[in-house]
Image (cartoon, rainbow over all chains, first blue to last red; front, side):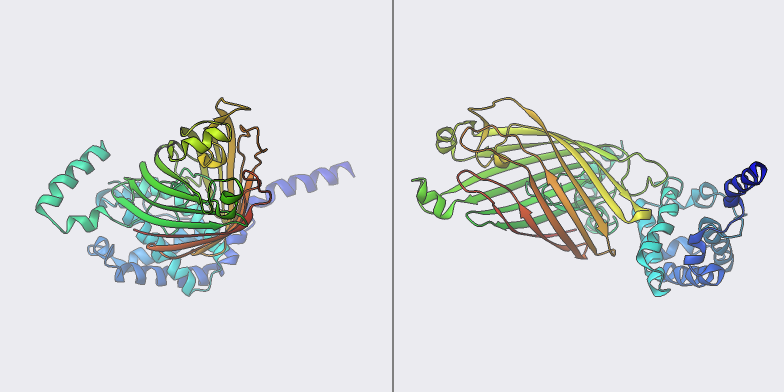
Length: 137
Length: 290
């Protein structure tokens, strides 16, 4: 009986290691995230404040890497294998205003994907600290 | 260093490149993250100062705004008009002009109907550490210090009610944190003050004439990028013998039409003011800026 209780206890502790994060599901799983990334990147490319940042970029690769990264950040079953935030943004000299433009475009995309505001904020809370690596100017 | 470079670039830039003004007034902050204008003209909520620097300038830019606030109470009307600038998301400078109309109470006290106290309020706030928005991986709030220097134009009446001075300076330490995953903004501020009713009845009094530490705080829940509902509390010293001065509180709704215009509506309870109890009612504030 004691052993059984101990086993359950250990299982409860270990569960988060393989359980999927609720946020990933709340964002519509991988299909939802794919749709969100495509809508976001479309917004970035149409935004006069930041579109020039992407002029030398391989857009298809950015879409693919963001789909992996957003999945991982939301706690989904992916591993982001792209470059570090520092490395990808080092030469871009992004300002704080540029970073916030990216956030606003992402928010607009989340609206268009019908992701509820409270869920949007749970996701943005995990991205927000990246400001420290992304903004270099 | 960034600030010095920015100021220098401003001087040079304005001289040679008019378009640079667009870059300087970058309106680069996220919507609502400059707060609104509190009752003494600083960036904050309604009653409480916040650690956020007013306006929408980022660390590379300047933000500025004007505001008008009206608090029609049962026996008085308080109005504030002000202007504030946020420099490089680091330093905030503000000026507000307050008018407190005593209406019929003025007549009852022999001051004359509609006798009005005025205050000039000069404010400065310096952000020390932390970022309320980006530091979501840390418990550290954004922390700022500031002062509000107030000059009241009714020294004789202030002396008659037991006030010791018509000029006073408040000093404050403020911490503000956005708990983004919970869509919750929390502010806690400590204020060193001698002010009677925000300074409207002067500073220090016959009962108590030392600085005391007072608390003010806000909590707001964000329902959307544009809309927040919240509550505030502000304690005040009770320095005058003529009346016990209690805490003020409010329940507020803020709506941001854009980075250029916001409106705050509240139910505010300012407690007893001079000879009249239960001074509660609407609070309405408009802010326009960039």
